Amino acid sequence: MSTATGRTLEKVRAQARDCTRCPLYKTGTQTVFGEGRVGARMLMVGEQPGDQEDIAGRPFVGPAGQLLNRALEEAGIDRDEVFVTNAVKHFKWVRAGKRRLHKKPNAAEINACRPWLEAELELVQPDLIVALGATAAQTLMGRQFRVTQQHGQVLAAPCAKGFLATIHPSAVLRTPPPDRDAAYAGLVSDLKAAVRFLK
Ligand code: URA
Image 1: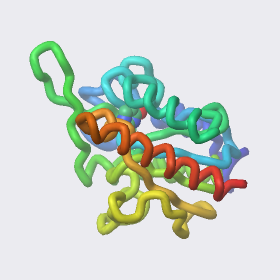
Image 2: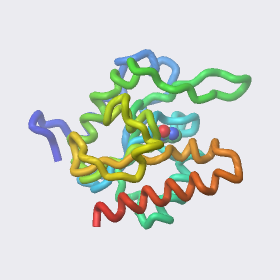
Image 3: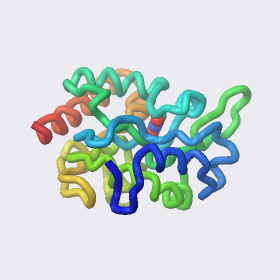
């Protein structure tokens, strides 16, 4: 599928590879573009690639991705049927000894990356957008959006039939036991609401 201007996902992916719209291309290994097929009914948006995604060039392949895979399976969602991407397509990090620690992208970086996300949405044309965490939710719905208050609800979306936000898998991993199980259960429950919407 292509847009009115003849753009295809592969062309946009190739253009994004050389993106210099913000300084993050200087420190990230590569652009981590979305993965999945045009016409996927669900498009899932995270924040930005992590350390392992930056190296692999694929979204959600590290620890957060493994937790996401488990939650998707438990909710009855086939990841191969989902288009998975991020609001920001380069890894932002600070050095801590030998480790590269995730650093939250700022508004300028999110806005610089917005055209890539918009192109993915335009080309994939999902029925439902699922935002993982506040960065993705606020990128799509505005800074006033609160995942804590509105998670699990299917809302009207600007460029899909519905929009649903849920907790980011990394936030589940960061939640100390014994609350982690409840955070994970909340993620699965929200994903099940997404499944019900798409039935
Ligand atoms: N966190 C994200 O938001 N996206 C990824 O791809 C990996 C971790």
